[in-house]
Image 1 (tube, rainbow, N blue to C red):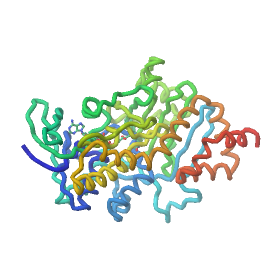
Image 2: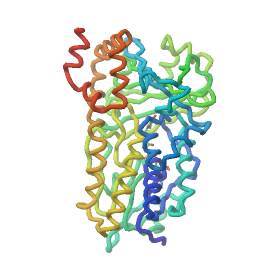
Image 3: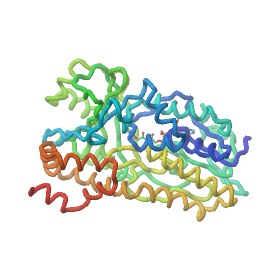
Image 4: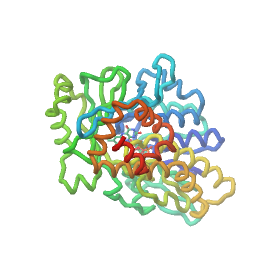
Amino acid sequence: MHETDVCILGAGPAGATAALHLATKGIPSLLIDKAVFPRDKVCGDALSGKVVNELRRISPELPALLGAQQEALPSWGIHFISPGGQKLSVPFKYDYRPEQDVPAGYISKRVDFDNFLIEQVRQRPEVELWEGVALHKYERTAQGGFVLSDKQGQPLVQARLLLVANGAQSGFTRHVAGLEQEPEHYCAGLRAYYRGVAGMDADNFIELHFFRDFLPGYLWVFPLPGGQANVGVGMLSSEVSRKKINLKKEMLQMLATHPDLKQRFANAELIDSIRGYGLPLGSRKRVISGDSYMLLGDAGALIDPFTGEGISNAMISGRWAAAQAAQCLEQQDFSAAFMRGYDKAVYNRLWKELRLSRQMQKLLKYPWLFNQLASKASKNQALAETISCMFNDIDMRQRLRQPSFYMRLLFN
Ligand SMILES: Cc1cc2nc3c(=O)[nH]c(=O)nc-3n(C[C@H](O)[C@H](O)[C@H](O)COP(=O)(O)OP(=O)(O)OC[C@H]3O[C@@H](n4cnc5c(N)ncnc54)[C@H](O)[C@@H]3O)c2cc1C
């Protein structure tokens, strides 16, 4: 059996980021994934500006390295299509200049982006990477820490500290940390890859469509390198059950019948099977650590409830988990009480945004307000600029919580 101080379970963005930050601190870790990289992950594949920032924090040259990859397409903004059919176009940066500016975001298939991170991991001698190893049993040892075993019950690893980053279906999260899936705070999502979708934006704006009959769900169309597109839908699991919705059927029907989309998809070809996966939302605070463990990324339910963005939050949690692990090793304190420093750091950074996004998610109950916002912003440059700034400035975004913002919107 392999013995280690720090074991990281799952080598997606959360686990890989934690391993890289630990390596920078000179702390060895064992990083284990059941898959062999490059591996696919069901996702919208959109990498926000927060992801670029987290890459920079790992190493200053990483954003440029990502930008130089053919597999990463720079994106300059978002088109929101309101339930009334108005298009609200919001650049990530007002007055952007694609030839000169550093892109605020990218779209890159996860098979490529996650492998990009793993390539960084492979260059670090401090990280031992095990691929193709699935762990299923977690037993506490008398001395503290865990023994991890495979499906057959064969013990493989003994670790003093466990960083749990094995995604939305983490057995550890459910059985050891005791966090259940909550349909009110969980989203169901589908992803399809297409080729030949017409009418994609010249500056690779991503598209979010909010159809009246599909609210509070949404459909996305994101451009990808090589003329492909990532197309998908997401909806709160509680609504999927309440309305007994078949997401795949709904998605294909919207693509085939919506007046605009049916033309754009008339000659498009589905190039992979349509696959689904869950999104554990960070719309509720949870306890994300305990004796000798921390929950990272989707295993700790940190996805933004309005945008569905989870990669950056996974990386942020990976960074803070590495910082906490360093303190635990230094102080030789792995107690639940000490570990709470991790929860505090993660929520200090993310809670303001997560809470706001929860409120914006609720606004989808009022499609007329959304229509009004889209219609006014398309005619009013100052308002369009304000909304654009909201992407980068959380204090600006707080204005969306104030009733006065909507009063001015309706009566100006
Ligand atoms: C349909 C959909 C669309 C989305 N769109 C976006 C988007 O456009 N932008 C965005 O930012 N976020 C998006 N997300 C969310 C994003 O995919 C996740 O938040 C992100 O992948 C979380 O990273 P992670 O490292 O926590 O987990 P993951 O990326 O899921 O990585 C977990 C890793 O753990 C491994 N693993 C699992 N079980 C075990 C085990 N027992 N033993 C060993 N290894 C194990 C897996 O193989 C995997 O490599 C979307 C999610 C879905 C489902």
